[in-house]
Image 1 (cartoon, helix red, strand yellow):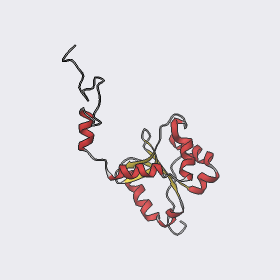
Image 2: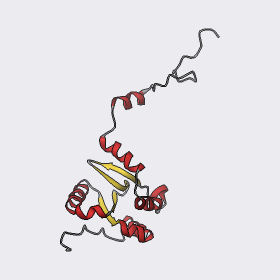
Image 3: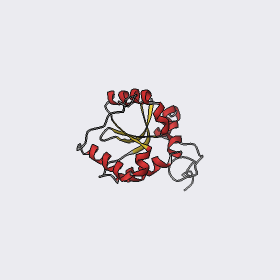
Image 4: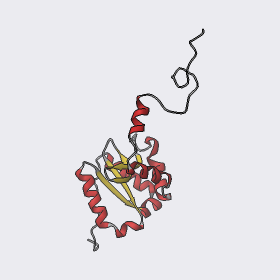
Length: 156
């Protein structure tokens, strides 16, 4: 039929111009990703070996069906692992965290204030006993074990 030829980008199988159209395209073009989102994407690509080791046990709902995200932004922070449904943050602390106890305590307090529970593990624990770490996370999720508190400076 003459005059019924499909036009580029009309959504009916014609040629596309490479420019997104539709309501979602207009929305995404108008709103640039937040800096935290961009940084979280970069951190996902550059996960440490220890984080990858734990992620291998948390991804794909392997832990009793709980869904975890990795390197997820919450407010001004990016957390290592997050179970949204249970509002549980799991952090793996490498050697640099020894010098950041005050900053970590402030961050944990902020996360708790907005309704998250925070669980921290030294990277050595994940390296040496990842199954034990996963079991600790599982017990916290099931409510069988209370959350440990962040150690205080000066060994107390």
